[in-house]
Image (cartoon, rainbow, N blue to C red; front, side, top):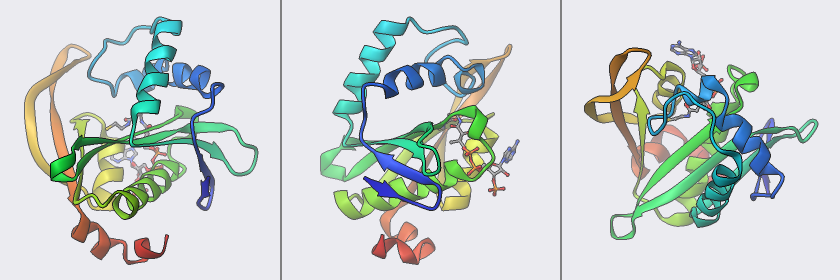
Length: 182
Ligand SMILES: CC(C)(COP(=O)(O)OP(=O)(O)OC[C@H]1O[C@@H](n2cnc3c(N)ncnc32)[C@H](O)[C@@H]1OP(=O)(O)O)[C@@H](O)C(=O)NCCC(=O)NCCS
């Protein structure tokens, strides 16, 4: 278990799955997903899928608030190709907590931890063009746009691109000199 200024980072607990389903069914969160339309997920199937996904992740953090242990969201790291020391970052914060700096705080700690503990040389992610909030967080922390899948996502009656972003270990270390001590 780890802690930053506002958040506790702990492993998956069975009770988290109900909260993860709630996140998945929040239309504000659904708008950021490319793999499904804005529609409710079947509960038992989705919870089972997320349990398997979390348990199969190289790193899974359930995030709870330090003050009252309220569920805030999750961060995860999934190895892409072991030989290339490349991994995919995932982060989701419950919408009632957006705009308080928690997404930045959670992403920063998770990326630090992944670089330090897994010997990765890069961390990758995909983000939709319209997800300005996520793009702001990633760009602020040092992720760079590396490519675009044109018309990758259909949303609200129009197409948008899916943007590939990534950060290299030396870029991260330069931008976050304190990361070595975390
Ligand atoms: C993306 C996400 C993790 C961000 O979490 P958060 O707690 O709101 O993030 P923070 O409060 O740390 O930062 C939000 C930043 O977005 C900026 N922002 C908000 N709305 C914006 C907009 N419309 N355009 C540009 N920037 C915007 C804020 O100004 C802030 O940047 P700042 O700290 O430099 O001022 C959260 O919105 C989320 O979980 N979304 C749903 C799932 C998701 O999109 N995951 C990422 C998929 S790739």
